[in-house]
Image 1 (spheres, rainbow, N blue to C red):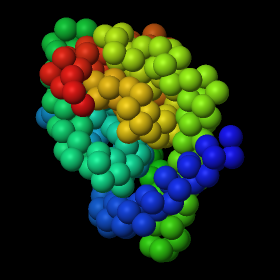
Image 2: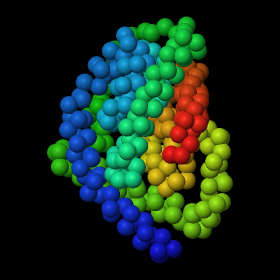
Image 3: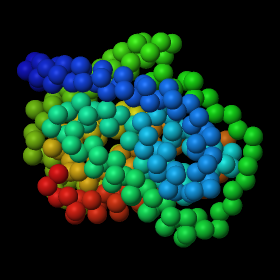
Image 4: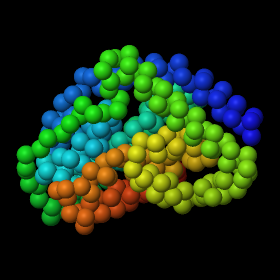
Length: 280
């Protein structure tokens, strides 16, 4: 077990310098995207296409802001689903920090945007075709975003430390599970090689919190789940957007429809990606 812990620490330490660089770049992007609510309001005119593009940007809090706009009547349900599906949370930085998986980042982003756009418009023309948009006064606080700190250095280092610590815990749990349970048993539990794996990972992705995207990405990088499965899991991984969705302003029935639609798009899309890219 000590060897497992040491191996986990060594693996994570190799990624720390790269994570610092990635988060420094993301900080520069995020500090120039303070008009998140205004950008998402424009999605009402362009629909799922704009929602998918907005959700794919490396700006934390997009899913939460989108859920708040929906609850206040400024965002259509199909557009909200598009934002949820295209959001990737910490997956992009983690994959960029891994030299072997860096080339998959572009493919991941493109697949999720295409999936969000197509799924969003299909939902807009079918399940949500009768939904109307109402507008109320809104107030979205983006200052409480966990990636932003009192100073650029503090924000970058703080986010890197937070991700590194969670990575360490996640890697230790995964490696310990492989050591104690066995790789074959763990792969069997996660339906390795099965067409049902995207459905299982999409279900895991519904758990609120950015930590789930870290877990799914590490499982993919470790070869435990397929590329289609990580696409499905990250497509339902909308962070704390689900928590706000079930808050005031949205009926439980409407919220469940949106969650169900997001899950359906993620499963179908992840399964198709698994067919198209079986070797990833």
